[in-house]
Image (cartoon, rainbow, N blue to C red; front, side, top):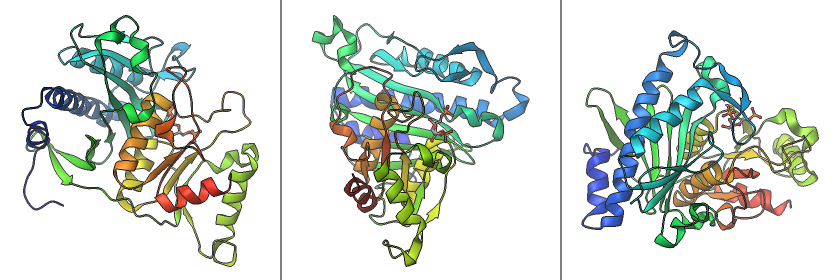
Length: 330
Ligand code: AFP
């Protein structure tokens, strides 16, 4: 815990200084964070809030996933709040096309409004994942071009986790910070100024039930981990899989580990399950800013150029040495 009380507002003001672009990024982060508090309050009502976890009609969302009532509500809250910020367009998992917001905006936000929504009715932490991108005048004719760039193009990224605590993990390109929402003060308070993910780990997270679907290198890496101290890795591993990436990610930012959602042979999972632009890119930026690694198994996530807003990507991120070890199996 940091020694003195530093609010998110104060941290952002200090970072932005007199720079107008930084000030626009700062106001966007503040808006997303405060919208997240409203979503957290809704999530915290659990079954009292009838139907939050219910499937919204029968149509899947843009990427083909089942849409829950709270997915849509979360997006609507973000759309309404971001209209007041310098954000020209919003790319959202819940909408096929970019959503036009502020016509004079110089930024684009890509967001998964509610990640982990298949867990809403099980009281498991869920969250909101966001990426903040530059938006230039040349792109006004073709706004999609603003999101079809490698992940290194991101200006800022973060996620909120709605769990026992309401957490914001944020990077502005200068390290990764953790803020905790203090309901007594109605402020996010800085808890960790510079997250450093342990380079080595003995903990991984993967949905092991898909083992028969994985490619040979992924199966070989898991098999070696399962062999424990007597096996080629010479150490025993532990496994954690929440089924909600923001929860698994926060554990990794807290004590290290590696998260894996590889491609598999199931229809629709040829490129894994996670979305490149509004899930893998932001988490990869946060991870690298905290000294970790993020790949699609072998290639650095932030170097990948998207070809579709809702494209999926295999995702491995966390403790740098283990992410590199996994890549060595390919
Ligand atoms: P939902 O948002 O549909 O719950 O998906 C969550 C998620 O994208 C990610 O947060 C989890 O790590 C992963 O899916 C869990 O996938 P499995 O249910 O296949 O294990």
